[in-house]
Image (cartoon, rainbow, N blue to C red; front, side, top):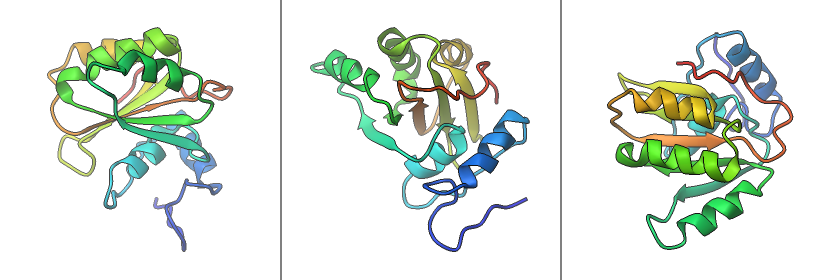
Length: 158
């Protein structure tokens, strides 16, 4: 099945999000064709709300990192981060510490490539999932906003 829009990306500020979320809940694989940036396809594919989001990009490596994590924890919008494979588990752990281990999230990596993966769950379940892997490639972390009243399934899934 394909979801196509006559204007823009399905799932961003339109009811396509409801269909995508139900597919995720039913275990139906979802793949989004990427455009010039990974953040929008990763956001849509995450199954988390797409109507309002905050794109943070890469967190500071050292100075100011804790301050940014604390500020991000207060946001009600879905949060999008880029991260390197070497720092993925550390960042997931820091996000869990700042935002709560049960905060819904997704990690999307290697979009449109042979080893594409979308893992959904809580920050703690994702940390456990990726601790067992030798992760490579480009990574996008999507975290549910502070008022995540409608979380996706809480077990990390591929």
